[in-house]
Amino acid sequence: MTYKEILRQYFGFDEFRGIQQEIIESIGAGRDTLGLMPTGGGKSITFQVPALAKEGVCLVISPLIALMKDQVEHLRKKGVKAITIHTGMSHEEVLVALENCIYGNFKFLYVSPERLSSELFIAKLSHMQVSFIAVDEAHCISQWGYDFRPSYLSIAQVRRVLPNAPVLALTATATPAVVQDIQRQLRFSSENVFRMSFERQNLAYSVRSYAGVLEQEVLELLQEIEGSSIIYVRSRRGTRELAEWLMAHDVTATFYHAGLTNQEKNERARAWQKGDIRVMVATNAFGMGIDKPDVRSVIHADVPDSPEAYFQEAGRAGRDGQLAHAVLLRGPRAEAILRRRVDETYPPEEYVVQVYEDMCCFLQMAVGDGYGATREFSLENFCRNFRHYPVRAYNALQLLSRAGYIEWSDAEENRSRVIMTCRRDELYGLRLSVVADQLLGVLLRSCTGIFSEYVFIEEGELAITMGVTESEVCEALITLSRNHVINYIPRKFIPYVTFIQRRVDNDEVTLPRSVYADRRLELEQRIQTMICYLSTHECRSRFFLNYFGESEARDCGKCDNCLGSHELLPGRRPLSESDLEGIRQHILDLYSKQGREALEHLHIDGISDTKVAEVLHQMILEEDIPAL
Image (cartoon, rainbow, N blue to C red; front, side, top):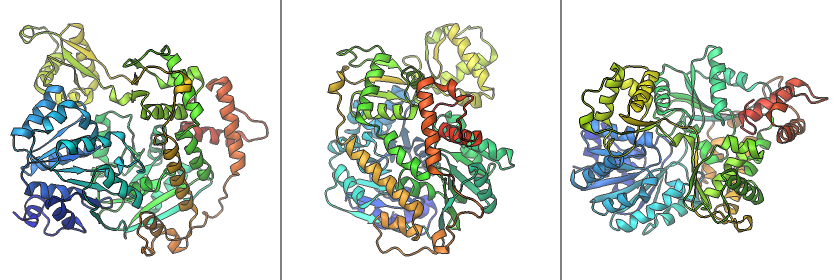
């Protein structure tokens, strides 16, 4: 079949959009290809159509597990054999999936970049007939990309195993420097880039200054702009508080962040996508792979750190081609908060070394010891004991991880897991409650390899399958464990630290330029670009397009600057930034010396308690200090 016949038969479209056909023909001819397409530009078509036209399996590398599962499900509904390998699958399940791709005539194998470092995966991959490699979110491979992920560097190893498989790299956000770096990191045989303009003619950008209450400002925007909305907030706590405030003011809303269970995430996303809930208040954990065309507004309550992040998140509005609004709220301290993020994200090197020493003391790890050791590590307890601010300490640990001293897993990765502790023949004749007996049957049917190794489970999903409550599932799991039928390890909210090398003396701790200095400078430049965006008088759409290398961009005629409406709202005046910074520093000093108890009845002479409470509340939202 021709590419157009495949498009019509499997996807129901008569014609390709934008540069889809050019990209398809390029990768179909076996050439390494980079496609730059804006959010909603139809990236998946560019690898799914040529993969269906070629022999073998298409290896799709993506960091978005939810998106991978969704695409696999859609392909299967169309009669296409597709499979995904993701965290949570047992060793046996992974092995079966890889064997199916070798012998089962599968067309798509979706994997996360972390999977590429597995010896089993690489060994099986060498026996597959791979048509080509598709790399989604390709900017993640670039040191200069706003979302660099070291695991993407393993793609070069895959290319060595599959020297004849061309690469199709796709991204929605890339500056000219990142475009060059992507091709270098992916070892393109020659430069081959297809660009689709990032211009969104139906999207109206605006920056709205306010000096009052953020929640009231958001409510007024939602009253002005009807329809479905996403509101991005920087902190997890902030998502919940804003969603609850909106609900109290008769706006249907829910919140979403990385700390929710998979069941909670799925339920909330589905309710919002169906239109049962109007507003999704979320951190940047929400949005990737979400395809809701009728979002009428994307509101940022906090200014993002980079133009790439903002452009991609704002671009989730108006995918149906109808007028939509991307509104960035600018508080009185927006610029100061942005600049402070540089030191928070990349704290001084001597501070990082101090965190390393304190962490080793906290874990009782002596100099020369620790190679390969794994320890539970509570960031909250660590910060409390050593008087560290959580955000700075978290980022220091991230830098130590990137520099190769430690690895540490976020709490969300420590999911519940079970293993059978009795033989199959011992299961018969057990006297169990109805729920426990039903649960045992579900586990045996759905958890491959449960007799030989631990398998991950989601209590909420099991409850839905069984038609009972989650608490009943947990009680049944505990009952089965007490009766020595299974060993059940509930989900824990404590991360782990693994020492990649022995503990070294402080003067031996070094941060390579590629880990610290270069990345800090890049963040400074991105933040300065966002500060310029806040105050620019040029067309906001053209501002972004120029940043992404489109020098011939025209004014959009829709943004606040084009319409001449960039004044403060009538009657509102920004608070003094120097006053606010002084209050903030006073609070930090007090917390550092006396702990959170000193903040419970905080009063600063000469300053109104209302203003102090406002600053304290904002610091808690930004996670500068723990919640009281």
